[in-house]
Length: 170
Image (cartoon, rainbow, N blue to C red; front, side):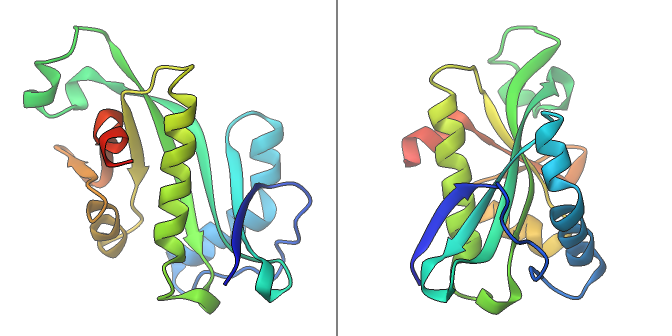
């Protein structure tokens, strides 16, 4: 595979499918029908993974947006080290999916790596204390935890990774 990442712009998304379960169908539906609108409305930026060896087929996507975390939502041991601001700046990796045709080939890992790299690049200009993800299910939660994401105390499906931790791993 020869994978490149591009901002979503006029790509044909009609054939993209990430699976047959309800979570996958919801992600695919958003990607096909609403991703461009969310970009136009400045609600998200969407990036696609293109396989040059497969006729520029989209093999995955993710979305990014700004986010804030309430100080009370952060684990107490981390919150103690922060100033008492109402909200902590973060980035949200809102939606991420890889095509069924490339399952087991590491595309999900490449999508996370590219998203984190972009967030860290932006964090040189805009403060980002943490990267937040919303896992759709237990499998997705374990997938993100394999990268060092930590579940929020009150939600096993919402996870975060400190930007400083991601920067050290870079």
